[in-house]
Length: 262
View 1 (cartoon, one colour):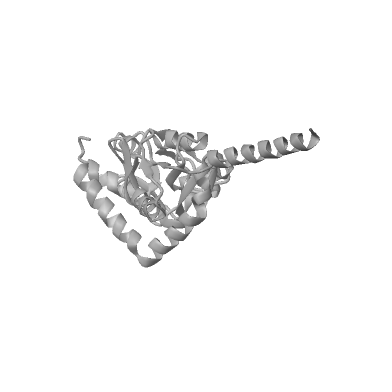
View 2: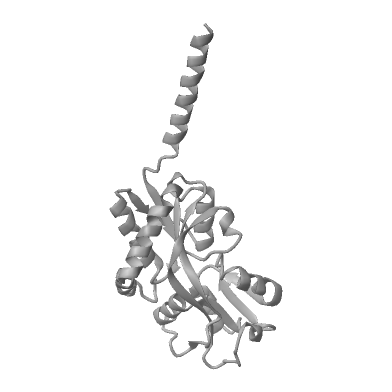
């Protein structure tokens, strides 16, 4: 009887471990990203397209793991969805201490993104570094992080409000409701061009910082176990120069699909 009971307990433990392992198996990656960050990521219907999605789709294909690109709302909503595990992966994300609590960042970064200050062309001001922003009114996209150090500087030293999207932030410049906009150089410039503001909005030099863009898995996702394989894939694709081709293709795709009326 005792031997039988012991065997039953052993098999129960084995079954429990097997079940837990099965539940942790990644059968499909649900990926999301920024809906308004060309050429790295942008919304196209119910998908997030762009160079970053193209990168992870290529790696997932090599690993023979299905990947679904999914639009999940604004950038802050996409971050929240990944934190809760509704998305397994998020692409084009800056690393900061808070996000490491719920995201597993995949090393290395796949791109560097200069962050700059945009101003109205007729109202530039002397700008050497971030200290020159103190006392002025700034705007940035809601949910956007610019790295732990600059995020802390914004919180402690600057007056910065948040808008839903870069276009809305640039609109505040045009309407004289703000002195500057903080944004990534590439998406900010793309949005200025799309809106036809090339003669009205300019980017100041130098860049405030150059931040790394990462792929990250939700800590709530079983797919996080694939991080080492994605690390290998990112290293290979960026080293070979294939990612730059993805950027060029994504920028052309975004330019053809968008117009100021969108």
